[in-house]
Length: 257
Image 1 (cartoon, rainbow, N blue to C red):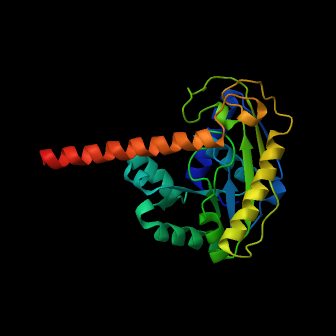
Image 2: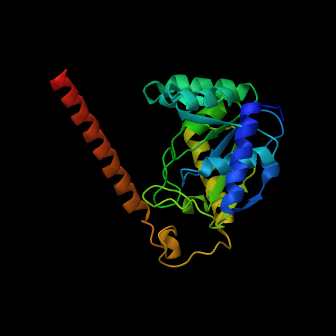
């Protein structure tokens, strides 16, 4: 693994935070992360901090992963510095094609690029509908997709719940599945990837205590989290509220401008 001073420091900080919180991180299937060459690391998205575990898994496999992050974050002096020195890939939603090209270039250069196929956090903690970006990248760069599932990180910090940043000793399970060859049409490869990620999630959840009624436990396990349909409606309402707020702000600026 190449030495990257900024990435090395950040990795050390992440491991310190995990140790302070007492998180009990268990990983299986790390041998499926290739020692060399490019790959799309497809991960489920349930938490604001699951990128910690993704990076930790990469380091355990002796690879530095490359995150895809909102391009506007580059305007922040500190975050922009970190993005540049950690080779993060800026994602501009208004120019998605350019972001895809950057990711494909990184993959062809032998990097492991992290992709959340669900795009946004799943409020149900189940797998949502997948976007096609991960499959497109893998096919264009001719690299495998590595399915990964994380379970337990959402108990620390997720959407709609208070943060739990103390020393809580939550168990966090990470399961990495076998590489998926970049074959077939985009839709077909996306379906194969989703099936593999579902299997990885089942493995990560196996044996994990799921107290009935707890808000972080999925509905199908008797928990209090919304089911997929209810979670989707919450997301629709959230996006509508954001859009209305943005339009109101633009209208106000127009009036006062």
